[in-house]
Image (cartoon, rainbow, N blue to C red):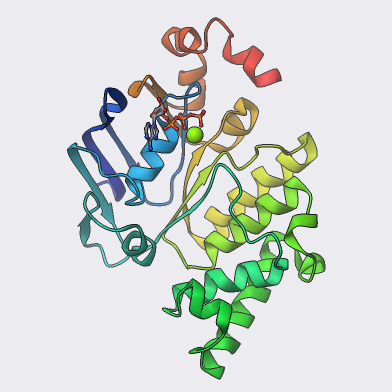
Length: 267
Ligand SMILES: Nc1ncnc2c1ncn2[C@@H]1O[C@H](COP(=O)(O)OP(=O)(O)OP(=O)(O)O)[C@@H](O)[C@H]1O
Ligand SMILES: [Mg+2]
């Protein structure tokens, strides 16, 4: 029996006349590293927004199975409730508090998860000393895990792209998620930072047991990391399979407007 964490069935999402997701069905197993790829505007971020309660598709069902094994219907549920249920994400465009230090950015993640809320966490008002200690310890642990201990007191805006991406992953992990959704985690990074990200993301799954759902344009990274891939084009799933299957699928090659996936990989 498979152990599903997400099950998406016949989901359609429209904005006026624009169909962002068109009868999308897909699933993810717990512990799996799954990638969603596709050209610009294919619906990848819309899918993430639908999985996190930000968008409310008009048709279909989305089920998330949390740690207690109880299926939770996502559509109609608020984003903060999905976060509390164990779904964490990073954003395509970086959303950290850039005037804060690395340490503060991760700590806010840890505290908002402990029911203090982002504003409360910032004001430090209702945090009891014990909560505060716990958040500090967790923050230190996570910064070590992602390799940012040395930059704990650096202002986030001063970090390199690679380090910012690590910081965002640490902040996502601060909420102790079951699954981490990464929207283009390698955007803006150089080849060596990309390699380090591949290793880090794999460690998040292997060492922390967090399921990974990944959107990424960089084919090299996708092929190195993903165990299975869905391809979206114009809001529809056009292919699914292992990296080798997807790479060899002529429908996928076509969707990338004549660029072979090998060419795209060498970019
Ligand atoms: N809030 C919104 N209002 C109106 N249209 C939207 C909204 N969100 C997404 N769309 C539309 O849905 C389609 C899919 O967009 P989406 O951002 O999901 O694509 P994507 O695959 O993430 O693209 P990219 O690779 O460029 O990030 C686009 O046509 C987009 O304009
Ligand atoms: Mg996107």
